Length: 439
Image 1: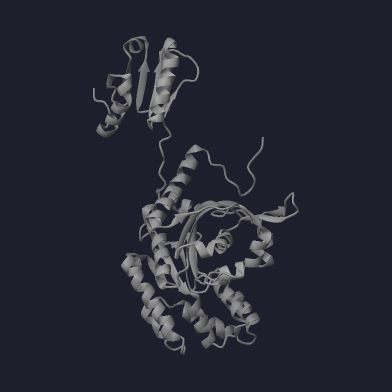
Image 2: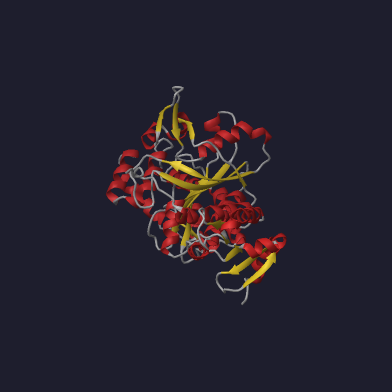
């Protein structure tokens, strides 16, 4: 007996139906926002991820030498692949580029609740547009997906921050450009660490200033209103007006999208990845429990870093299926799909071939149908029909064969009619619209 590998999941039909429910919502809402679906290989050159994230990423990947002696890795995320694809086609693509993907990803890390070694993600990215309207469009898409899944304002919040604003504040605090990445990393991790650990990290970045920086950063992190944020920005020199204008514009657009009630200004959100350049955000359950449901932001220079010659502004976000599924399940928002055929064929011993022919026609007409794969009596076939969950039984016996007809029995109401075989599909369509056969 073999078990699945640690961190990998099986999807029997019921679980697969619930997973595919998420996928359908992702696709339906993304298309409503005029995003186009794309796909890409799950196996990429290892150097693609090293170039983006540094050598430390290697320990988190499933990587190996293929038979051509190439260093390859199963994709842990999609942004580098997207950058590679867009860079190769940049001149021929109409701007802005609005693409989305639903696909499997892999990370070699310790499995835990809400995090596996194999997981699915919805990725949406908007490239070729630097205006704040692109950021607002993506946040509105994120909220629309959650709303479509049944989540409301009492269920989740989108915590909004801005890397440019933090750079403005850190400059005002005397943080050098060289020390900035380590300070931002300390801020990003501060919510998951003890204050003393944050002070230690800040001290390593700016010797002699760790405690002072911690105190000032905590004051900034407590800012929650736009007015307070704008007042703080105004104290930060010549870059302040442009930064303040971006905040005002984004909040205005989010209000126009109708999603402002979901938004919380929360400067503790920094997003650990160094390539983010502007607004960043993460969606969390309103209760504050569990991991982030989604996260993203603006990454204007990543394409140039990965391609070397294509420089396009870009922003995007990702939703992981594991934490989202856990959230929806805890709120009873994952539907249980009926795993049943529309019809069940019941045929006499001499009419088996005719019945299968009728079943074939019914399937071509868009209905699902099942039947016993071995010849058994009418009684056992009726029992199978009942267990199958089918709404209707199609009955073909000697009388039906002789008269070129088929009997349709409603297994809920017990009503039944007989109809010519050549009008069966039309009659089934009629029942669908009328809600069944009445006794």
